[in-house]
Length: 154
Length: 138
Image 1 (cartoon, rainbow over the protein chains, first blue to last red):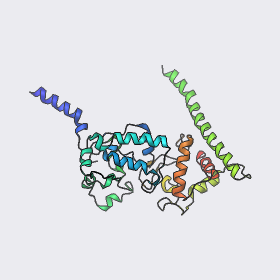
Image 2 (image 1 turned 90 degrees about the horizontal axis):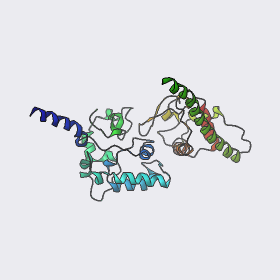
Image 3 (image 1 turned 120 degrees about the horizontal axis):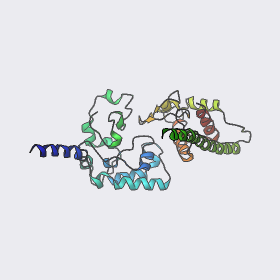
Image 4 (image 1 turned 90 degrees about the vertical axis):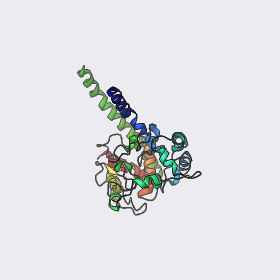
């Protein structure tokens, strides 16, 4: 009995990342890490559905007000990775909670506008105005392992 | 066992630095050709002009990035912070970050984005060469 409890505990620590509420699969593609991570953290594709990523890759010349255009071969490779690992395709970790809030045909672009994000980020203004934070999309300012897909409360 | 590694490191490290330097030199040579084409009186890039470019408040671009220093700080040997996204930026000075200005595509992409954001226009080949020359001496 005791042994099986220990075995279960060991098993839980093994598989807990996959079950963890505040986890999404990390970005593993070097091109996506480099190009999407050039100006901001390379956000994990699990946070948006594939149709959102398609729209984003179509609109890189006006990427939240910036011209983030890339050569066509790179755009295509990044699009393929993001759509193959999108939240509605893989449904891993936190993705299913985010996907619940996306309307059937919707193509949201801002992860920070998802109600699941908002629900977990109700902070006083001074938190958002901290010079380390700058903007709501700067996940690693508070979540130190955000680039590895871990968003537990730091 | 350790000695061969040390000996190898002694040879490889300067070679890596030289390779980076020659890649940067090739990019500068390219900009020099373009600068000469744009203005026949062009003779050489200037570190002083590069520094002025770096520190000038341009007022033509995004209000969050009036100058290069808005993200890269007053000291290019320091890490900076993207004024729009908050992301940390590695130092631009070559002494602090020897990989800077060694990949032509990356250099062109970054000038394309940052000149638009800071100056509100494209940078000329002269400006790009001056900037790299300044950073290479920092």
